[in-house]
Image: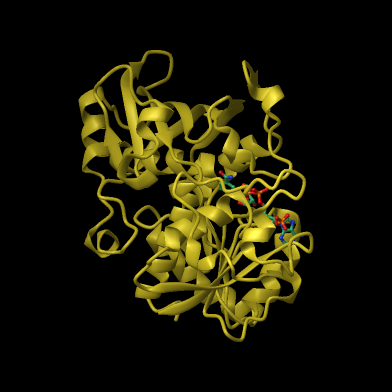
Length: 359
Ligand SMILES: NC(=O)c1ccc[n+]([C@@H]2O[C@H](COP(=O)([O-])OP(=O)(O)OC[C@H]3O[C@@H](n4cnc5c(N)ncnc54)[C@H](OP(=O)(O)O)[C@@H]3O)[C@@H](O)[C@H]2O)c1
């Protein structure tokens, strides 16, 4: 068993980490940390709204009883000596200073964007860009750290990159156009999205999101070349919107491929995309990375976000696009706080444990 801390444990993603790690066969949660606002209290008290007494537990699963009385420490005072791993689920502002501090001693797997675009930092999706993990050796050497930082991609990039991977491998990609309809939970809780603003509404702008998706997709599907990643040579253009859905990001995707690609071949490539036996044997690996549903009314966030425990990306409405060269279009749904956050990060931890980077 390795000992892990969750930093940002009180937030939406932090809570999903507690759920993803409950009864985990390899990883035990031994520390919880958050901001100075909640530090010094038990986890239960930290989650309790002082004015109403309501427990601000977000997940569908019940609170993890065995951790409810654990004290929450101030993230700036987290002691790494008794730890083998830190899961970081804080905003990128505090992550910029806290994550390197932890990484000097222990590996850090982060859901924040603070280090995603640095040359020696891989963003990992097991089975999609497993080989990028080798960059961690260069990072450790260059920075003189005992640990390292590896962030997972943005929750909107995650399902997009997973579905593009088999298309890129089979046909080559020229360009991608995507419009997202993102869930409210993707904005977190502090400050989050106010119900009055999102109910009966669509918000057509999520600051910074489109740039993240564009850069991250190219990096994830790029080639590891020595000590850096050469971005995938296709362009990505997107519009990111927020809709009144609790969990599960929906995305409409248009892809222009290099080689001709018809609908049955695109579906076949996606259905046959398997993570490989090495990843499939990890405790959190989904049975399927991509599920293709033939029902033209699917995927829907309410019906499809929890497929394979929220770890599979569900695709539907695969059609030919007549505007783009070799155009294919489809709709996907991916779970933003599971595969797109805590579940995806735990899967990365398992892969890096298996490969000797952690523990
Ligand atoms: N929500 C998603 O779907 C999603 C998906 C992928 C990635 N992410 C990323 O994951 C991170 C967490 O997102 P979230 O949705 O869980 O946000 P959230 O619900 O707002 O939670 C934020 C967490 O960070 C803590 N925190 C705030 N300021 C801090 C500081 N200065 N030092 C230490 N801890 C601090 C908060 O603790 P207190 O309770 O003490 O304030 C809380 O535990 C963000 O970087 C986000 O972009 C989110």
